[in-house]
Image (cartoon, rainbow, N blue to C red; front, side, top):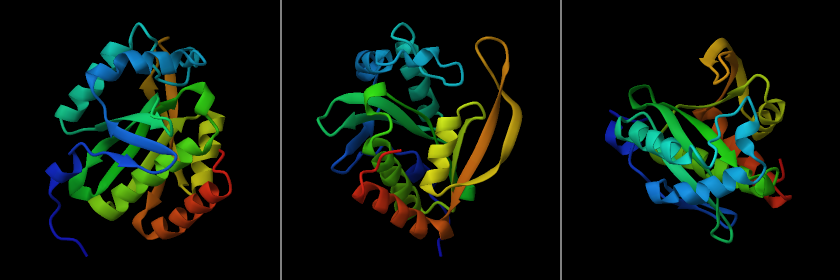
Length: 205
């Protein structure tokens, strides 16, 4: 169906939006607002996440932009329907040659969690990956201990591929077991219908 993949196309910053959420290229000037978003719920205290504190958010954004420069990621700032910055997400582990990428490094202020916002954001990201970039598979990963995230990913329609044990070092010196999910190109039409149904019926997850 597709010819040779232009890898530069996969790592170009892009803006995406719908009535629930807007995603725009992450910039250093967003650090302060992201710090405020992370402070809503003190998200950095959750041991199974990688959310920055207000004191570390500048370095967090710098790292994201470095990953983007290297071609490993495309980072977004997430705004709610009112235009307020409420979190961030990324395409990462970008492998254009094999038509694969991951949606990860996602976190939101506590006040917008379990609302339509995340469902709407995933709809935008998955649609762009499959319908514009021509991805063959999109991965979603989370900590084995993050049971809420695992349930939410499964509810999107993603299927669990497996568990990477001792996959990542944690700040406290321990290891994170990572659960890997994926959605295939052939599964996207059904997943898309499911996401639209969730949004039409409230989108809470």
